Length: 159
Image (tube, rainbow, N blue to C red; front, side, top):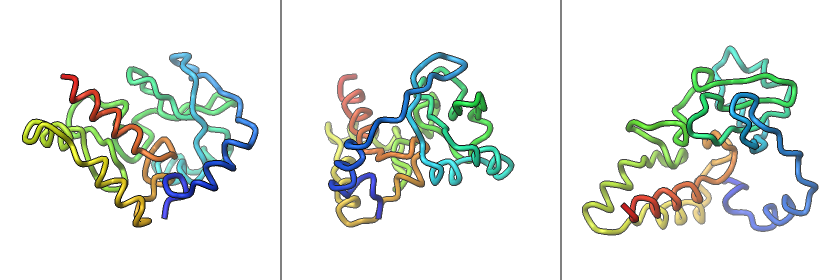
């Protein structure tokens, strides 16, 4: 079961902890989002497993930047250094939006086109409640992807 999605007590305790300082991506300057070691170990290619041992890595959310992870020590890992496609950094299908259950932006778009709505966020929510997600491992951001899925649905519905 994913602690990031289904444990409100953990989420509350995480917000009570002092925030890690925001680092900026050395390539684009955008503030990063801290990523746990567990996420990094599951996302990087095998030749970079030792590299991430230094810790202190952040995720770059800038869609136009090739950097995926960067450390406070200046280490940079790009799209070529990770095992999977990073949905926020892709412009061509398949664009992953949910890493635990394999939903893509095309699946969202197809359901909206066919029905005028999208039930995928509700389906993911049901899986979270069932304890079957693993966002902290599967999602390159190391956090629940439901927010990204919901934002993608809203964007597609506005088109």
